[in-house]
Amino acid sequence: MSSWANNTVIAKAKSIYGNFIKPDEYEKISKFKSLPELVGYLKKHENYKTILKDVKENSIHRGNFESLIKKNSFDQIYRLTKQVFSKDLEFYEINLVHQENEVILTSLRTMISDDYYESKGKIPFFFDVHTTIDMSLVLKATNLNELLKALEKTPYHEILKPYDTKDNQQIQYLEIENALEAYYYDEAFKKIEKHYKGQLRKDLKSIFQTRIELGNIIKIYRLKKFYKADPMIIRNVLIKKNSRISEKKLDELILLPDPDAILKYLSTSEFSRFTSDKDYVYVEYYAGKIEFNLAKKFMYYSKDVPKVFLSFITLSEFEIENLTNIIEGIRYQVDDHEIRQMLIY
Image (cartoon, rainbow, N blue to C red; front, side, top):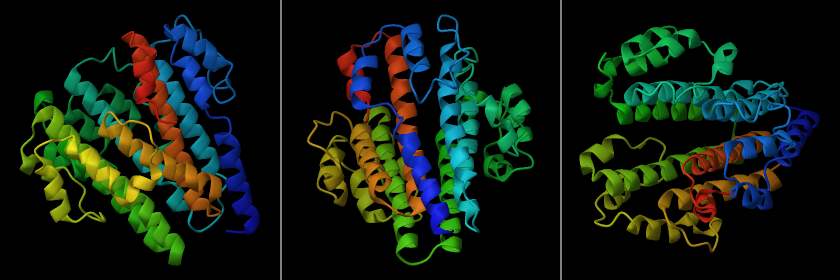
């Protein structure tokens, strides 16, 4: 990729990121008490005014609102990808694999909960022109067997086929989530090996290895803390390939009697320099803060397009998660202080 092309993609990514929601804005919107109040605010916000310009504050469904927020992010990432004119273009399309995974998992969660109204709008209808998944069949699917038909011409058909069932209460969600994650990471590492060398290859691998490790730690914590899961079950849903944490260390974490002791592991690990002095009340926040600060570091200082691109995706995902948490906080009338405890910015 030429130096000019490098500068174009990086400048565009930084420009869009400059319009993301700022800390003082999160302080403000976390105090909102109604969805129309939040929608009205974001309609005037630089990052959302285009996507929300035709939205009616008092009538939009919460699920549709969340979908538009996700569409905004997807469109921005897609525009960045279109700026790439080099042989490593397929690396930048790795986000499509992540989006496809989310489509499948959202559909499965809807089936398990049997709450199709609550899930309204959460399956990204805008995604159909970018994927080989038959989105019309996804939207109609009421069980995993029907979903498989929507995935017939994709790699996901073979991934999900071993879990086929017509009984939604028999869907092995954690196992499927793990299988889809493994596929995503396999694709990412395959593309890195194919297109990059030297320090850049090492750095890109490190970004994904960090995600794998933090993801595994969160899984261990959640399954131990909230589900009292058997160690064997936990081991079966961890991503072990390409992890820098040894299986021995993972086993030590799995066998910790107190799940909250995992926080101590993070605070003394190589990741500790990317945290802040804020009191961490749960491991998801701790792990998220690590990933967020790493992404922000690359966004500000890296001159490598792939690293800036991955950082942009990560920071965009955190903004989506923050807004989703605020929307849920409004729905359940959660105290604004508690909402801010869940936000990462």
